[in-house]
Length: 115
Image 1 (tube, rainbow, N blue to C red):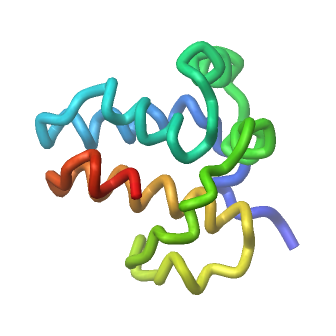
Image 2 (cartoon, rainbow, N blue to C red):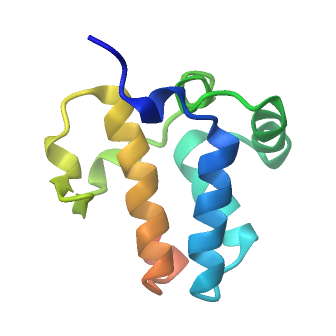
């Protein structure tokens, strides 16, 4: 069975979409980066390297220093699917990040987003 296309998409392309979404709602690149760093454990330099190396989303998450222990507290619906019901661990991590960026774009405070 082939991998979902999102797994093999370059993280840098998704990152650019996250930035566009946030900036349309008057949020900043710094806030997007903070969310990604919180979830994945990357520092700013590590995040920058991942974007420059044009790694796939799968590689980006596989090389993440540490997924935040509170990630399991992320609940809600992304793309019509409940995040907490997703079984594939990689897809769940991708949807966690999607959900956090959605919350940023919806105007939630960083304190509420970063559980």
